[in-house]
Length: 163
Image 1 (tube, rainbow, N blue to C red):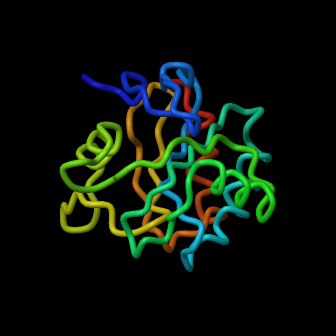
Image 2: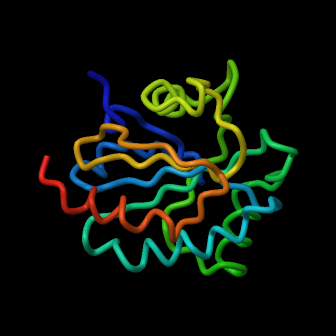
Image 3: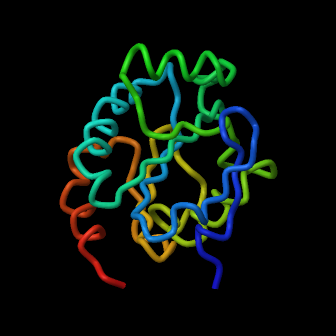
């Protein structure tokens, strides 16, 4: 069975970023955008990261411009925005597509493993979140409107799981 650890994505600088390097950690995978109504969630994501990274959490942000062209910048602009506006220190990787024929294979896997409401695979909007266990299996999918603070109990459960 394929796990998230089997994928390699592009880092913000375009170099390969094998997700196998996160084996044994809980991942929160989020498609992000700098000009979205949900953009302030960066603050909550950063708070989760700072609170739980030593316990084994890694948050991976994937900028995406597929929803209302709300992430038009290049990697340098995105990094500058995330750092200056929200003091983001978790990994923000290369810009990707999450839906359609150009969807990154990681997102194809995530949406197959955990489709949304009514079994719809497509990512609905920016800041859709996927919680991945230490074993690389997708645990749960959260809607864009789900604030990072609301994930606290689920994160703690995944962090304390031994499987």
